[in-house]
Amino acid sequence: MKARPTIKDIAALVGVSPSTVSYVLNDSANHKISEGTRQAILQAAKTLQYIPNGAARALRNNSSHCVSVALEKTVTQTRFGTLLQGIRNGLRSEGYWLMLFDFDSRGQLYPEFIESVLQSRSEGIIYISSDGTDPKQEWRESILANNLPFVACDCCPPEEDLASVSFDYERGAFEVGCRLLGEGARRILYWRPSIQTDQEHYREAGLRQAAALYPGAEVIISMLPYEAAEDGADVERHSRLSQICKQYLVQDILPRIAQFQAGDAVVCSWGVMARHLGSAMSGARRSIKTATLSAGEIPLLPESRVLISRPRFLCGGEVAARLLLQQIRGERPESNRIVIPPESPQYVEL
Image (tube, rainbow, N blue to C red; front, side):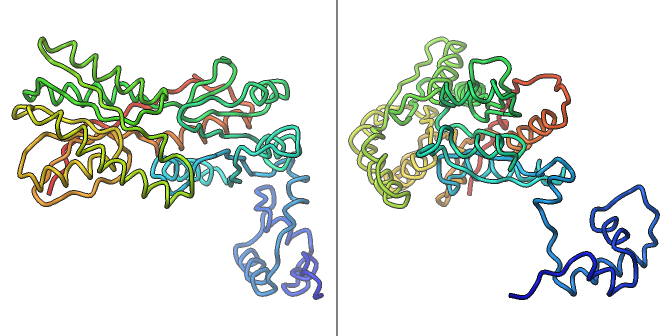
């Protein structure tokens, strides 16, 4: 096997000392090196296909410049993919990278995202919650006992010393409800999944708070039986969920809104619900105001109009990265519990 090129090989090619090469490759600001020499060293490193020894650099700098990101859900979902992009943006601006882990802890005391920090392979943890659930108690106890830099994203653990970034789902639903009721709606049907998550509780509470401001207004709740679609691969699960939405739309939603007046509305928790509702309304040549609280893009039919309030997941990911890096640097943030407000509701139409 061909030996890996070293700093000495680069120094010999350029005609400088190995220490000069080291200063350039490590971007040392304490040594004056001409721009011509710097560029020659960088070009020689590329020519020789030099690969820095990351482990040695981490030991030398006492920093791996990596962060563990724990995520159980699929990254193809808009919510989680956008959060990851925000985290990546925040880390990259500070010269850090992310390592993605799931929650699996089989065969070891703690899950890999904790082990990686305990073993100094990464410097902190961003935990992306599944459906608003907190990390397990034993995980939280380990993080606190070992004083690990940590930020929970999309949940709020009970321990005050654990930092968190969460999203104001209640405000998003409240603003949508006020917009629809202010435009003349008297009945709002909230179509939501039957899963009992904090996110759904907050959204329902927001709509009810909005209705309380308008005498005679009514919020009707319709729960999609989601459990039947939970098992299986992502593609199969999404296909089954779509089929369940279409069936439930015919069996429950359309009969409920048959007596709705002009201006009354349906608020959909998920984008797939809004898509099927819009298709049914288009075929029936009926006009019912539609809103969605989904972060995903909503395919619109011609002449359709949907009111959308999206959580700012990209911003939340960037804030989580910034909050974690402050802990890693030993800085004290102004607040370690941050709530991200939603985007203002906007109509999207074709």
